Structure formats: structure tokens, C-alpha cells
Length: 111
Image (cartoon, rainbow, N blue to C red; front, side):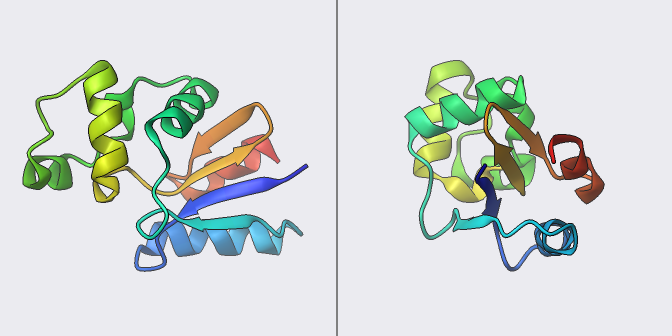
């Protein structure tokens, strides 16, 4: 089964999570989400797998800088698709499950 990591190579938590996956024999599909942002539809699917509302994957400082901090629900999902730097990272998806890699060891829950 494919494991996908929504990754930012400039983020230490994201790099640590990617290494943790590789150290556990997982060769994930790496999506550098700042270069290839998930669509609003993809974000809805990821949030469903995470079992989280959109606000729980929001990077507060970046959301404020992007002017999207006060949005919620569907409007926030659309805004995150348009402003991916405000998405918390990394997110790892495997099948019907997903986890936010904060701390990185949380990804082991879905392997």
C-alpha cells in the first residue's frame, strides 16, 4: 500500500518524519506540497482520514500572514489549497488513515 508524505524539505520535523519512514523500510511517495499543493477536494479527503477539522492543520503564523486566519470550514479548506504554506506539516497518508507528523513518531501509528 502506498504511503504518501506531504513534505516540506525546509522543515526539520518534515525531514525527520521522512527519515523515520525510510528507516522503517517505507519508500513513501513524496509530495512537496508547496510546489504541488493539494486541491480543496484532496484536502477534504485528507482531513477526513485525519479525523480533524481544517483549523487543526492550520499554521497560525502563516495563516495570519496570508490573511486566512479568521476563516473556517469550507472557506478555510479553499484558502489552504490556495495558500499551502499555511498547512501544518508533515502529513502522512496510508490508505484510509492519515496522521500529522508532530511529533514525527506519530507516523508509526499508521504503518
